[in-house]
Image (cartoon, rainbow, N blue to C red):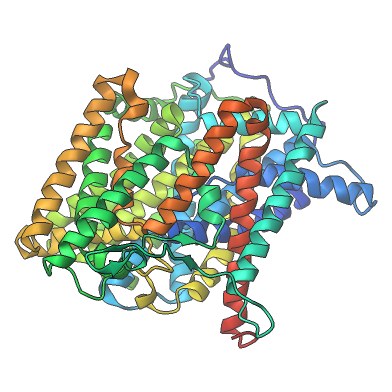
Length: 597
């Protein structure tokens, strides 16, 4: 193979003297990432959003090992490159929700009414996660070493690690303290609300707005209420004001205007509530999310062409071959081993024809290429839009089969997400002069750990399929996947006429809003986010109200005290989310074990 000199802008080889792939770094990453994956699962089943765990885990690991060192329970300081391996492991574990547990699997459960077995789910999401890591190998050298795509989250993680382990480490300790206090607050709220003890007055799950009715029904019947929770407040603070106000606008239109009118016309079930309203509104929301994603993706056609070309360059050997790079042979061996496994699982678990299984893997590779480049350029992984492309493809190849539709899209979207996450952590390692092979193995351990945490937690939270699509577990992401699958399987004509109009209008608005963003960039802050607006039609209004409140509080702090906002908003919000969700999972486990009512 032809040797190439190091890229002129690439960092020098990693310092050999500093340990990287240590047992404590990997174990800490597996545990922290696994725990944070529970938080991600909890939040995603509520909101449809996933939250990155790299920076949170790095801050937590730094603080934990600092305490252990002070107590003389460990002999050596936890180094920066060790922490980088730790966050690589944790990131893979935290994103194991992307293997299907927040979209394709719950969507399939809602359609079939059947619960996926624990072992089947474990092997399924693990195989997809590992395939995503392997598919990232030929992309790393071209996208990171040669083109030096930004991967903004990777840069932010590297900067955080430098700050934690450098002269400004005190700032990291302060963020760790804020994260801890936010976690305590979230845990107290969850315990106060969900622990059903005779001696404890419980915080209500829904705080009703008295004295106001719509179409003769109280607002709470339309999910228009406040909630006793900090999770959505924290999520809103992190997600940003534009997405949050777009969601609030969508919630007011859907639950405050359309739902009362549809109720008065007898279109939706008179019982009302989230489940019956969203049975209609999912068509508007799904169409908007689908068309906005595909339209935005269409504008990235140059990204697609560059992505495919860059990977072919890697196969032709037109990339750097530096010390420590993951060998291309690993890609070949990995694909030879994993492709039969994934195709077999598709056939054995879901009855997908073998040739369709192979096609899903091939399509998954190209989708992973696009997902990685899109993440590198924009810090957004378009798994939703890319998954819909697969749904449409297999909707044509195997019409009427919702299982094939959903689970082939699960393969392509899942490998794309994991490949993009791999390149994101490799970007932080590249900036810190870390060994890519160490990070690669770290992510493999993370995939295994994440599966071990996510699968039991999913089974605890969702023991039966009828819990999905309810006020407690709305699963907005799954609602969209389910809607697309059913539409492709049953046809447009089976919908109620008003739902047909909703589908058409939502789809048109998704395109229009993306075009407005592109053609009127100066006014982008005033144009509703199509994704946020569409998501509001599949999310309970009380969740949206809380998210808007969190984003508004964060905005006010950012405007008045920018330095304070930089130090506090993300750590405190992450603490709210982690503390409340982890106590929620713990209490659910205690109920299942019969230790609590």
